[in-house]
Length: 139
Image 1 (cartoon, helix red, strand yellow):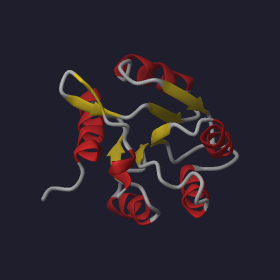
Image 2 (image 1 turned 90 degrees about the horizontal axis):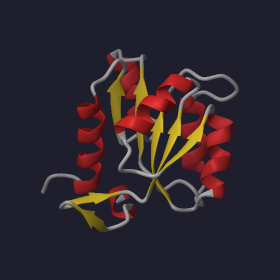
Image 3 (image 1 turned 135 degrees about the vertical axis):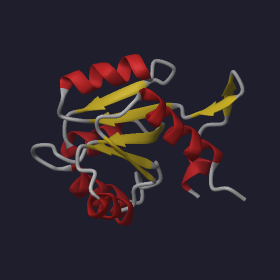
Image 4 (image 1 turned 120 degrees about the horizontal axis):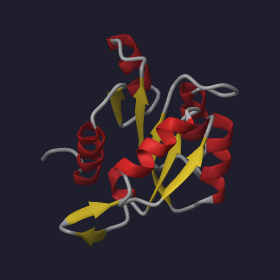
């Protein structure tokens, strides 16, 4: 199961991933994630190609926060390449995008995303999605 990949260190009773890859072409979004997710070490990429490179450079990335609409390689293209590469396929992906129609959500989940959060969002929505991944599926 993908959630088993999370590093099992406990901080304040919560299990947390060691490192999170943020993939978004907006510098403002990267700054927002830095504030919102300051408890997590972050690695940054501005498009899918750069994200693939970061995953290969940082073998300890345990979660990917992914935008869909980006130049060079969009989020769904990135997700397909990531999931096809056995060396980097294990990290769960949360899509965070303005593309929030039901069919967009379904496409993202079918492509291998573990969760989908629509922009604009509240920080609690992201933290809740991460928490759900850490806990794994309900028994």
